[in-house]
Image 1 (cartoon, rainbow, N blue to C red):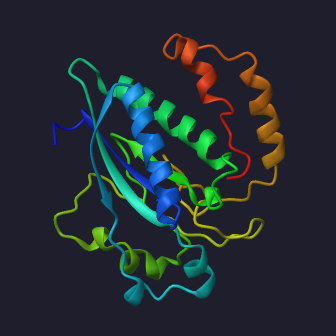
Image 2 (image 1 turned 180 degrees about the horizontal axis):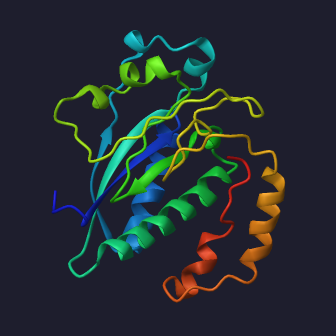
Length: 212
């Protein structure tokens, strides 16, 4: 890997069906190339089903989890890399979760795709997290800061994609004005401008994916 800040890691939920999974990964590969980002490798995230002892609902809905490593070309600074990764994430989400030819399209979810943050999440209770994700018990796996968040879902049905944390922070509390927030964000999109994204801004819309 190159030095910190010049590469990114993504944790991706994917369909368990191999053909549909390959379709999702191929699209991500193409989107990365369009942003002039180099895919270094895909890596299957190791999990321990026996020790974690997931419940039947979590097992039935469990996605396949892959990790990808991406690097930027010389001259692309860290913030520019983050913007390109954001474009890839939004476009992949829009195209794959709305692809009616994929029977497992709802399994696709980008937990994180960043040079700064790696998110491990799942339909798990607190005790199952470190048992399920083998990476988190590896002594070579280090971070300057780690946040672990767990809460019960009281106004949405639990699922792998809705599990905490979200991509850049943990959230604690009810979101009882969810639809109002979605409506306000949708309204603001009509006035959105960005010197950094320029004519690529439209590729980010809708900013909020209502089915997640």
